[in-house]
Each structure stands twice: as C-alpha cells, then as structure tokens.
Length: 476
Image (cartoon, rainbow, N blue to C red; front, side, top):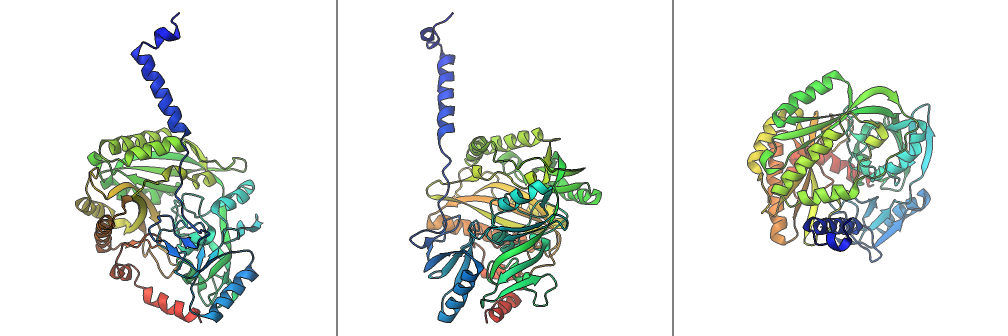
C-alpha cells in the first residue's frame, strides 16, 4: 500500500488535490448581491444602480389609513411627488423622484382571503408572488399569469403589466377581478373590470402614476401537472413551430432561448414546453433554488464571451436535454431560480431590455438583427449574454399597450461599462435596436433603463397623449 508521502510525489495526485481545493474555495465564496433600494440616508436607487437620487423621505406602509393620510397631506402642501416602491426590480428609476416621498410597500403584504370555490385570492399590493404561492399551493391552486420568478411584488408586477410563460391567458392585467385603489387625490376606491371610470386601464401598466394598489383579487387556476418537452430548432423554423404549437392546444406554457454564441449566433434555439397531463397536484411542495453555484459559475464563464460563451451555450443545451420528459407542477414551473444571475463587477452593469415583435415578423426580424449586432462580442464593451423568447398575446386591457397584436417578447440580458463613453455606446446600439424593432411593427418594454429616445417612446406607445391627459385629470 502506498503511503501519503509516496502519493504526493505523483503529478495526478497533486493535480487532484489542487482541483479539490479550488472547488472547495469556490463553493465557500458567498454569492454577493447587488446593493440597491431604500437607504437610511434617503439616497435611493433601483436594481441597476444607474440612477441614484436623493428623496425627501421614505415612509413604511403600515395600513391604508396612514397611506391615505400621507397622500392627502402631501397634496395639501403641493409641489411634491409621491412614488410607490415594492421590491424595486424595475431598472429605470420608476419608484422614486428627486426630493419626493417614497411609499415603501414591502410590509403591506397580507393575504386577505382565498376563495377555493371561485378560485380567487385577495392579497395586498406589497406581497410577493412567493407569498401568494405559499398560500394557494395547499389548496391545489395556481396562478394564471406571473413572471418566471416569484421574487416580485404584486403591485409592482401589475404596475408594469407583466406577462409570463402561459400561452393562453395573456398579460397579467387580464387576471385581476377587482382591486382597491388609493387614488392620487387620496380617495380609496373599489374598482372592478366593469367600472365606468376605467381605472384598471391606466393603473395596470401605469407605473404607479395612477395611485397605490392596496389590494387585488386575482383569478386562479388548477395546480396542473405538466410533462416538460424540450427541442432544438433552427431560428428559421420557430415561427411555424410556434403556430403549430398554438393550433394543437396541448401546451400550457412555453418559452425559448436563442443562441448568442459566436458560431451559432441567432441561428440556433431551444424550446421548453410544459404539456398537459390531465392531472392536478395538492401535495408537491414549492421548490427552493437549486444548483445556484453551478449555474452562476456557468453564467460567469459565458459572460467572458468567445469560446467560453460557446461552452456556456453547449452546457445549456445539455441541461435542457436532460430535463426532457420530467414532470413539474404549475406552481413550480412559475418560480425559476434568480440568485445565480447576481452580477456585482466594479465598473460594469447588467441590464435588461425587452423588445416585442409580431409573431409573423419574427424570422425576418432575426435576420435583420444579425446585421446590427456583433456575433462575437468577446473584445467589445457591449455584450449580449442571453435572449429569451416568450409569447405575449394581444392585450385589450391597458392604455400603454406593448402587445397590440400577438407578439413574441425577446428578453435581453446586456452588459456594458459605466464610463460615459461606454454608456453612450450602449445607448446608441439599443436605440438602433429599438428602431429596427419599430420598423418591423414592434415595441419595447418600459420598466427598464431608458436608453430610448422620446420619439421612440411616442412611436411605440401612440396612446401616450390620452394617458397623459388622464393622469392630469385624475390628479385633481
């Protein structure tokens, strides 16, 4: 039998020890989270940290009477803005104004009522989707629409009229049965879809401009069990593939990812479908975040670009292939991991943008996009790390409407530097990207950092003038 001393002289043994040591060290390093939000010094920022601002004060929401009093008193003083903040995952400074009053809604988070027979839940605006899922899972119920992660607040998600992976229910605004609203004049109103004043049309997708969402009653559905189906496609096949998917009506939820690796840039995709099994679930618990460190390590490698981005794409495909045929509950399909995406590199920032393009224009749009973006951004400051494709059905519920017909939403994860010239370069590229999107009959999403011009905003949202008129009228 060899002794430790003899083994230590062998290169493979030393190499193994070094590998084990490196793995242990990497596994022990805590995942640093971006610091943002509402501070004691009244200097606030959102998730990107690009738009810091000093506010007059931050008020913790305790009850609706106190909130109403703050709105009325602020109106009487005049000249000061009130904003509403939840978890602050928006990236464009929507939740605060300079020298303004910020209503911190995070503690305003009670689940008020669950109606198992009607399949509804009434919940306060500061609650998260995690809170809702914890409350409804024991009843075998699930959300109709939510974002792919459960970390956002109810009020925040409705204020941006978020959409999700379900291909049958459309944007989130369509799942709200009624709500209680604190208006800009300090009135507390119960609002339904049939209300003649059409508050929902302006509150949902209104970015907090039309009042504070105190509570909402959401329509729910069964906590179905799905079989996961995954498949690799060429980008040119996706339009027809998706239309066939809708026609056959066997799929509940769907999303896709597009390659940004140099050798297959915008040419390859993989799709993930959640297909009906006809079964419902009352027992499976909500899953926690899984494989965080491994996922973060893979993403960090892909962030380097070039060959490592190729490796990241191939790793993603292997993982996606490995889950083909697995089963999952609806609630668990609606709570993807998020911690692994944390990015805190000094002098750099990661931001989201989302572009909506008509389903029938997708192939032509992607071909034109290849001419705009570099296929290998390893040595460039502006980097595209990920493109996820979701379906956004036509929205007939809101004023600032991003889905004027059936659209694909392309969610883009972008990284760039924080020097003045680097931000200017990113802004120029994204404005060109926005122009291309508009040329194809598309729009862009408003919750993110405002790279776009005012002209691009007005073209994307032609109802903006009516929206502004209603804002001024309802401010009293």
